[in-house]
Image (tube, rainbow, N blue to C red; front, side, top):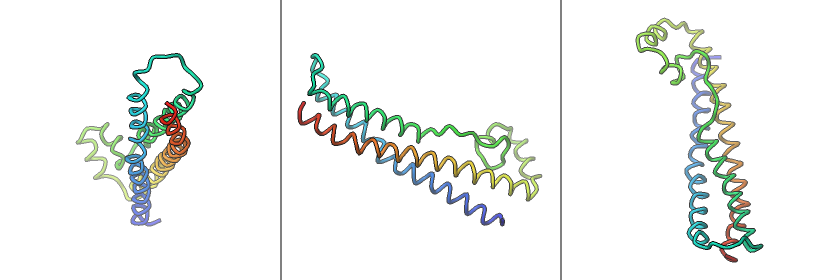
Length: 154
């Protein structure tokens, strides 16, 4: 595969990652706002839990699940390759002189192999992030009507 095509594929993977991050800017703040409203509305009431509190408890639980998936999408736990002249994490572990020598002496097939590795790991990151965003949206869709019921009966 040509290096130009590999770069294009890598850029596509990075675009998918950016797409998931853009969705998080919308989905991420919503559960925090909903929980804050719940806290303001119900926080001052100190009483025994009643059946009317079930929607509040259920929506709070679902919103916490949403927040977990948002946090997971923001912090994917995937390691980069052992050695890379492309991945910032591995570059930053070396001294500048070592990195400079490494990248200037790198052969075309080594760079191509590094690009292939970056395409792969970034595809995994994009997939993981989109899974987390999808799950966050899924639970948010279920939490919202229950939360509205909690506000109505509370």
